[in-house]
Every structure is written in structure tokens, then in C-alpha cells.
Image 1 (cartoon, one colour):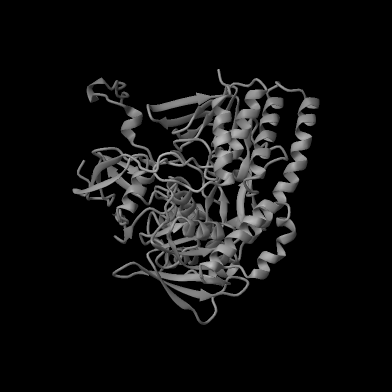
Image 2 (cartoon, rainbow over the protein chains, first blue to last red):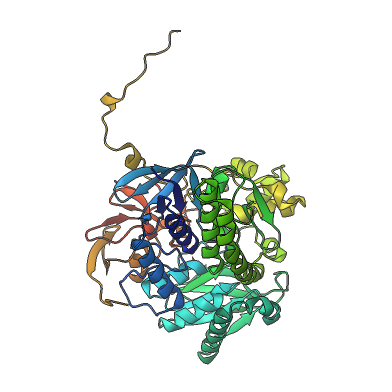
Length: 470
Length: 92
């Protein structure tokens, strides 16, 4: 009998599982990666040396903590379905399996937003988050010479990491201006450690002579005989392209425009979501402890709104305390007493995370600047021009757009294109993002081989009911 | 980190022989071997390769021993038979 299922073994999920387990709950912790840690504390693959970092050290501490706890940790399990009564189906190394519990904490973190441009689908163009994974887990850069572009703190982390791994950085193209960063300094002062690391990255890049281009975007990437050629373009404060620009030769491009909460499970369970206009993204509507609009369902970490890795474990612990209280395993007074210091620390950590989220919020000019021929939905090759045509014929909501154009109907389930498609519809009709909606969550959450679910069977063994009389 | 020299294993991609480190994902092994074009997209037939590397985008889906799998989620194993993920080129 399981009391609580936690999906996602990043900093939020691990903290939630450990805290709930310490309170005496029987906890199952599921994650799709081979080892717990999430993307921030991702475990090294062990194939190449990786540079030491605070995140790596914390990852080891978290994994040791799990190993020494009563939590039933199941890494390597891909969750593909969650039912209304919290039956969670996963595909693990030994095949299909499932758990059920009266309480569920969703700690599935964030995914990267990448604004489409011609050539973003070319092999060699990867997400900034993908580049961090290559550096952290495998000790390699995305290419021999990488263009790093987009916005937010990952730019510096990735560019400096590439240099450290022995790669070249062709340039760093940042949508933000130095003044945009400076405006967030007061909030960033909440994390002097990260501020110091940011300064270290900048110094390392300047020493290496890497061009740091502010208020600059990648307008286009094309394949050449030897690699990739990127056209960079200056932009205004709203991300609108301005005249001029330069061309950069590279063999890899790492590009990312911020983070989106991963909402597929909360969308699947049809809980209330809210659009955060400052961060420019959707997340489940939560109370201060992570309770969603569905009884027994909690969200912790960036999946409930981007607040960053320092806030994540605090949100995980708060959700675990709320779940324990709601299950009748912790009285209200004890919950309040245990939660009070966490809430204070969260307010401080979230301030930093939200400043970063604001820096990564999409600028209106970025959506405007998507060229008609750019592929928006990568799975189904749906271009902006096709989305605009559907909008002109009356599509106002993303699920309608999906039915008309197949945008979002492919194997990624609209994870990559959903936000951009909704932004394009909202812009076309001059309507709020709430009206443009969000893709309905569907199972399977990830494609999975049907044979894995059915197992071996003979057609003759299938019991068929007799036909109904005519 | 511990060992910097990982066990080398052999595998094939579209009948060509490749080597990679056991412990890397198939997507990383292909990237290091210089093979970045993993399939053509279904409608435009445009070249695609690994993009998110964390199992979300499905761009790196290839045929692994006859099953469609995202290469970034598959640990590299000795003797793996991998084919381009382009729809219509499968021969499982």
C-alpha cells in the first residue's frame, strides 16, 4: 500500500519524497532518467570526466539521501499515464508497471522554450538545456565551435562550460541588454553565490575573446558544406529585429529562450491552470503549499511555475507536509510549525527565480519576427504561414488549430510548439492567451512501443464476445 | 569524476559500423561519432537530429533493434542495430 506517489526526481521531487517518508508515509518516487537528480543535479554518465560544480555535489548528496531512506525510488521509469484516481502507469526496464495512491505530487520540472527561426530544425542546432546536459553528464560540448544564443542565465553557464570542456564559442548572442541584467541585480542579490558564478563566467568569456553580443538574436541558420552558418540580427528591447547584422560560422548552435513549466500531467488531470503574464507561461493554479484544484494532487518545483532550483526543494517539502496533513498523518498545528521556516526561505529563493523567469519571458517582437516559412511544429512540419492561414479562417483556440493543421498532433504532444502556436493565435486575433487556450493533455504522455504493453499473445487467445443479434 | 576511459562498444547505424562509450546514450554516441543527421521529417523530408536530449521532443527517434525509440533515452549497448528514424525506411 502506497500513501504517496511523487513523479519527477529532481530537487523538488526528492525533497518531497524524503520529507514525506520521514513523516512515516510510504512513498514511491518515479523518474524517467537512469539516475535521480533531475536536469539541474543530473548524474555524470561516467564516460568522461566532468568538471566539479555545486550542482553536481548536491546531486550526489541527494542520491545518497535517497539511498539511505525508506523511499521506494524508481529511476528509469517513464510515466505514460495518470488516471483521475491516481493510478500511475510507467514503463520501466522490466516492462510495464503501475502504482496507485491517495496522494500524488507532480514534480516534473520545466522544459525549454525555443522560438522558431528558419534552420532551427537542422541537425547540430540543440537547446541550451541540451547543451548543459552534454556538459554536465557527458563532459562534452555540442560541437567543436558553438554559437550560444537566446536569453537567461543558461547562456553564460553553457558558453563558459564549453570553453572549460575544450570547445570554442563562436559568439554569445543575448536578447537582453546589459541594462536588462542590471535591473535584476537587487533580486539576484538573494543568491550571491550565483551572482559570483555569473561574474566568473563573463570574465572567462572575455578572457577567451568570445564576442558577447547583447540585444542580438539568431535570425536564421543554414547548413553549409562544413557546418552551419548563422545570421545574427540586432533587436530592440521588445525583441523586434533591427537593420544590420553579422554572419557567424560554427558547427553547432545552442539556443534557448527560457523555461516553461511542464504541465502535461496537470493538463491531463484537467486541473485549473493560470497564465502568468510576467513569466509568459501557463502553470497549474496552486495554493501556497502546492495544492492544485484537484483533491490529493500537488505540484512542486518549476512544474508549478518557474522559481528556480533553490526554491524547488522548499516547494517539495511544503507539498509533502500538505499531503501528510490532508491524509490525516500530520495535525494542522504541526504542519504550520514545520512549514513556517520553509515558507520564509521560499519567499527569498523565489524572488531570485522569478527575476530570472522575467529575464526569460518572451518579448512580443520575438513572436512577430517568426518568418512565414519557419517550421513551428517540428513533429508535423507545420509552418507559421499555415498557422496564420488557419487563424484567418477562424481558428482561435489551440485545440481547434491542432485539429485543422495537425500542429501539436505529433509524437512530442505539442510540448515543443504549444506555447508558440498559442502566442501566434493570440497575436493574430488580438485576444488574451487565456482565450487562445492550451493543448488538452492526452495519454500516452510519451510514445511507447505497443508491444511493451500487450506482451506476447496469440490472436487465437483473444476472447471475442458473440455478435449482438440483429 | 571516476573513470575517464569508458568501455568501447560497437554498433551500427544504417549498416555502417560505429564505436561509442558504454554509459553514453545512443544520441550522444552518434553525436560524438559525427553522425548528427538521424532521420528526415515526415512531411518536408528535412534532415533532423537530436534537439532536447532529455526525452521530450522526440526528434532523435530512430529504429533500435526494430523498435522506435528516442536515441537520447537509450543507453548504448554492444551490437545495437540502429536505423534512421525516417518513416518508411524501417525494416524491422
